[in-house]
Structures are given as C-alpha cells and as structure tokens.
Amino acid sequence: MSEPGAVSPIRSGYQRVLPPLGDLRRLRGSTHLIERHARAYRHMWLVFASGVAEPLFYLLSIGIGLGVLVGKVPGPDGSLVPYREFVAPGLLAVSAMNGAMYDSTFNVFFRLKYEKLYDAVLSTPVGPFEIALGEIGWALLRGAVYAVAFTMVMTVMGLISSWWALLAVPVAVLTGFAFAAFGMAGTTFMKSWQDFDYVMLISLPLFLFSATFYPLSVYPRAVRAVVEWTPLYQGVTLLRDLVLGDPGWDLLWRAAYLAVMGVAGLLLAARRIAKLLLV
Amino acid sequence: MPEVLVRARGLTKQFGGFTAVDGIDFDLYRGEAFGFLGPNGAGKSSTMRMIGCVSPPSGGQLTILDSDPVRDGPAIRARLGVVPQEDTLDVELTVRENLLVYGRYFGLPKKVIRERADALLEFVQLTDRAHDKVEPLSGGMKRRLTIARSLINEPDILLLDEPSTGLDPQARHVVWDRLYGLKQRGVTLILTTHYMDEAEQLCDRLVVMDHATIVAAGTPRELIETYSTPEVLELRFTPDCHEQGAGKLRDLYPERIEATADRVMLYVSDGDEALKRVRGLGLEPSSSFARRSTLEDVFLHLTGRRLID
Image (tube, rainbow over all chains, first blue to last red; front, side, top):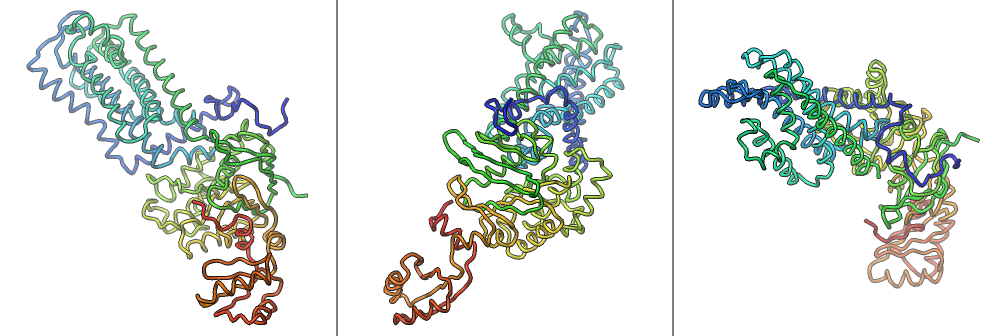
C-alpha cells in the first residue's frame, strides 16, 4: 500500500483509456460533447443539411443517368436487377464512409490543433475516452440522419425490394462507426493539413473499387481476393444483400469485421488523445 | 491551522531528459491567493498542469483536495476551475453558449448552469455581449469570459496561468479587479505570473521559481524584507559621469549596488540619507529617486538580470 498521493511507477490514471468498470457513469461525458456539437451546428444548419444532398446527387446522376445506359446487372443471387437498384445500396455505404471520415478527420483535426477544444474539455471531468466516444458518436448520429433520409428516398423511388432493408440504417451506421473510429485514430497522427492527402489516398480508391458501381465478378481473381478484404466492401455487400433481399450468413462476419475495426479505432483514438494532450 | 488544499513534496516533472520541475515543496491553504512567480521557462506552467490533473507528475508527492491526481483526476477536476495561459474558448459558440456547454462537461443540470451563466456574465461585465460570437471580442473580454467559464462549477480552487499576459493596461486592471473580487468572496486562487505588480496586488503568499526549483517563498512583505532593503535609491548621471559615479559608489556600497547601462541602484535602509552621502562624495547625479523596495527588486535579485525567452 503506497502513501496517498505518492506517484506510482505505473501511471494508470493517465495511461488508462477506459474508465474503471465501477465508474461507467463517466461515459456520460461523451454525450456532453455531442450536445456541444449539436449546439455548434445550430449556427451552421446549412452545412448539416447539405450532407443529405450529396449522396442523392450521386444516386440521381449515376443511378438514374448512367443506369439508363447500363440496363440490368447481376445482383447478389445472380439474377438480373435494374442498375439503379444495384447501385443505390453501394452509394449508401459510400456516403456512410465519406460522412464519417469527414467528421472524424477534418473536424477532429481542427478541434485538436487549432480550436484547442479537447484541451478545454480535458480540464473538466471529461476524459480522453469520452472525447473519442463523443466525436465518433456525433459522426454516427449525423450519419444516421443522412442514412434515414437516403433510405426514404430509395423507398420512394421504388429501389427497395425486401423487408431486410429495415436493417439498412443500422448497417450504414455500423459502416460509419468503422470509418469514423479509423479516421479519428489516423487523424491523431497527422501533423499538418497536407497529411489529409492520405485521407483521399485511402478513401478515393475504396469509393471507386469496392464493388460500389459494379459486381465484384468483373475483377480478375487476384484483384477480387484483395478487394474482398477491404473495409468498404464489407459495408457495400452488407447493404446490397439486405436491400436486395438476399442476406447470407457471411453478413454476420462482415458486420463483425466492421465492429472490430470501429472498436480498435476508438481505443486507439482515445489513447492517442491522452498521449498528445495529457503530458 | 487552515485547511491544506494542495500539498506538494519533492514534486518533479520531466519531459524526456529535460527537467521542467525539480523537486518542489509547497502547501496551498484554503482561502488564500498563492502565486508562482518566475521568468519564462522556470517551470510554472508545468506545475500548474500537474495541479490541474492534466499532466502526470514524474516523481514526488502531490495531493489535491485530499486525493491523488493520478487515481482521482476526474473527481479532482470536477472541483477545479482552470484559466489556461492561452484562451481555449469555443469559437463555434456564442459567449453565453460557451458557459452553457462548459457547465455540461461538469454534468451540471441545465437549469443550474443557466442561472450561474447569467450571474457570471454579469460578474465579468459581458452581459451585453452574451449572444455574440467569441471571435470578435477583445483580448480582455476573452480573458474575462475564460474566467467566467472557469467559475461555472463553483470550484474550490481556481488555477490561473498568467491571467493578464498580453492584455493592455486597462484590460489588465479590469481582470485584476475581478480576481480581487473573487478573493474577497473567499475563492482560493493559484496563479502564475511574471508581472511583479500582479503578484504584489493579488498574492497573499508566493514562491519564486527559477530553473525548475523554488528559490524563495513567503508573503510579498517577507520576501522584500528578506531579499531586499527597505528602500532603493535610483540615480542617473550624465553619460560622461556614469562610469565614474558608479565606480565611486561601488566603493561606498560594495554589497548593495546594481549598475545598469543608464542607472545606478543603491539598496539602502534610508534613501534620503543615502543621497546625502552620495552628494558628500562630491557626486552630483542628474536625477535621483528614492523609493520603497518592490517585488521586482526581489525578483531581479533572485533570478538575475539575464534575459530568458
């Protein structure tokens, strides 16, 4: 038993990322950060609303416009489906990724380096894990609003053919979770705005090549094996199989893949915030 | 004996091989205003961050509000108010929203926060700016808002890291006036500063830090009595007589003379009497000024005249 106040060799209080189990109430701190963001966006509601428009523009130009030229493509079970029905769930996955990455990279970097928001927050009882959870939670909340709007448009346009599509919004949120957590963890390593080129370097190929716009079967075998292991492909497959009503057991491990990626990113992001700011 | 709120023994902070704070001891009592005085880089801010539980000590003992900052950081921070050296106001929110949101980080009920926010805005004279954004505010207003924000949880201890650095004289006096008001209300203050007048005006007790250690401690009065003389006689000579005058005076007061490029300062018990002796030597300064010793004399005596940036 050490003397009270003596510094223990293991500085667990600062290095520990999760609050002790007996003190999970502290996680409520993350909701206070979400409240802060909700209040800040009241002054920028147009920015918030514009997030709804982006995936819809894609759906109109690629789904409808390009869809007229493409006609029908093979769906998950091999039968032919109209291109716009095929591509819509892919676009939902993409917008979940993009929205989450935007919130958790640019916005987090600004708050971390320029606004010093986390320095201010850490001088209150809120800790680094609650900050990471709050940031990612906010990204998901925003993503959920966009996913609901997009799914409603899909319904109105008759692009949904199965009750499984009810799972589309939670799955879009799960996809967002994986990318928001990954993006925030990555952002804590960034030094300047130039480093954001890496965000594009990762998200653009994922956007274009994750079987978003065409079936995986167009790739040669070797490429297919690579794409099958990329994260956005899991989200695209989950959403497409659900919306088109052909879910297989593989969807469970795909969901687990995204969940593990999200939890790992969350823990790393919290650890990094502590390492950067609690020195 | 008044209650001890912060106790440090051998408190040390290292960054890699660099020692920012090297085994300092101090006690903070409830209700007092306690100052860390020192040049830039002396270790004041590192000490403040350790007390604020956002920087783990590298060694020694630190007890804050009877708790261990390493283990009970969040619980301690709930009872602290922090005014950091650089403003960390939320520029995406309005003045009043800054208080509302910050109060929520402490888990306070919204109704309580609203009442306190309005009273605090009144206290720091920002009520008429309540619905403005933060960015257009002047430096002094931002500082006052930061002070209001730090009080939203009615802290037991208020930590102020260079509260008036960078402000113009008027703004500094408004900040001091508010801090003095808090002191009158019995709020315990810890502040760092390199302004002697700030330390003299606000601090009941202070320590002088230099090179990561405490080189002196006491009330402003005690420090002046210990490290300086009751009075200081400042003399100026015409440029051609400066060297000669300083030289002669050095013989008269070998221990208690400080000569700068344009002035000679004699540390004496009686300034007028000393001036007579100076004139008795046949020296005729172009101007002379006898004054009481201040903390600045103590500070310069202890930390030297070298420039630290």
